[in-house]
Length: 292
Image 1 (spheres, helix red, strand yellow):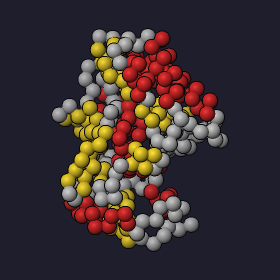
Image 2 (cartoon, helix red, strand yellow):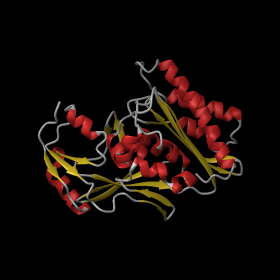
Image 3 (cartoon, rainbow, N blue to C red):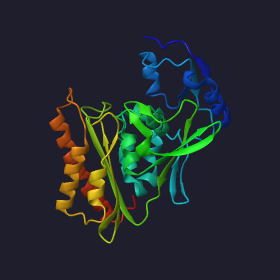
Image 4 (cartoon, rainbow, N blue to C red):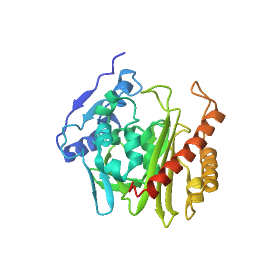
């Protein structure tokens, strides 16, 4: 099947991009990496009248850490995240997630911003952003607004991003002190959609959890923030009993459906097991002084 006809635009500046989005409204669709959008166009699950290709816009592929914030541009690609020494040393949950996104071909072209805007509940980055308490800068011709990751996702393939807005930046609080993270993912084969994924991010003080983030992949209508599990960890020493309690609460937060990848009970059990493993890995990294 071929895509429905559309007009193609290739702006060279952010301002030109925002002007097009403002002008075209619901008829415009941003093309970043295209690894999600192009298949949807070919299957006619999406049929925008106008495609806005932002790959010629300079300065949208950045990754830097300043003013106590990790900042990521919408065109920063999965492969660049996989190879980043900054992410490997200070944000291991992101480094682990990056190398598990789809397959090498998709990672070469796909972008973090495009993946988040696509909002597939089986997408890895949504869970990572929930675990890391990320905030998204959404820009339009009229200005910008900041939206927390927990408020960004609104359902399967749905977000609070408006038709005239561009996901312009991703902000993540910079790690400080001893911290650690992990991303655990179960898939039937390389490149398959996740059966279950769990993102964990911890920051520790004097052997106790200062802050905890847990995001769940592919076990609900959108990526899930396991808030009760996070709350059970804060202020606690990470002994086996505390980890088991948090893992059980994360499993209870999951809302999976039975399908060819497994039953509801099976998927909830995988969430429990992966949360336990992820917390132990994050704890060990924090103890080793891995600033992640």
